Image 1 (spheres, rainbow, N blue to C red):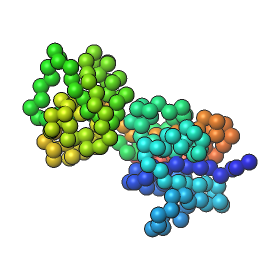
Image 2 (cartoon, rainbow, N blue to C red):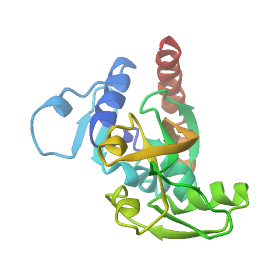
Image 3 (cartoon, one colour):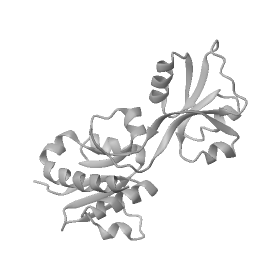
Length: 211
C-alpha cells in the first residue's frame, strides 16, 4: 500500500506559505526550496510528496485522487463545487469576492445588469439572492477592462488590496464573500490515510490558532 501522502500545492506566494506551514507541521521536503523547474518533490523519510499545480487546478487533482490533500481558495470551492472534503480554514490567502464598477456607476434596477466575471456561479448565486436580473459575460482575465470599455456595468472579482481597481479608476461597490485558503482531501483516500491526514490537520490547526 502506498503510504506516501500526496499533497497538491498552489503555485505562487500562497503555495510557499502553505509549504512553510506543512514544514512546521513536521513534513519538510528541502528539495522544494531549490531553484529549479521541477514540479514534484518527495521526502521518503517523512512519507510526503509535494507537487506544484495551478491554483484553480488543485481541487481537480484532489477530487480525482491524484492528490490525497491540497490547498484551494474558498472561491474555487464555491465556483466549481468539487466533490472533496473541506477540512480546515488555514486562515491565510485572505481576500474578498466583491462587486466593482466605475466611480460614476449608478445601478438602474429597471434594466438588466451586465456582469463580467470569471466566477460565473458565484456571481449568479449572489445576484439571485438579491433578486437582480443579470446578463453574465464570462472572462478569463483582465476583468477590470470590461467596465472601462463598456463591455459590462460591473465586475465580480477577488479583491485583496484594491490597488488594481484604483489604478483602473474602479471602485468596490460591495464586498460580499470573505475568501481564504482551505485544506481539502480526496474522499476515498481520506479513509485509507486517515491517521496521517488527521495528524497534519491537528498540526495545521494549531498554527492557524496562533495567528
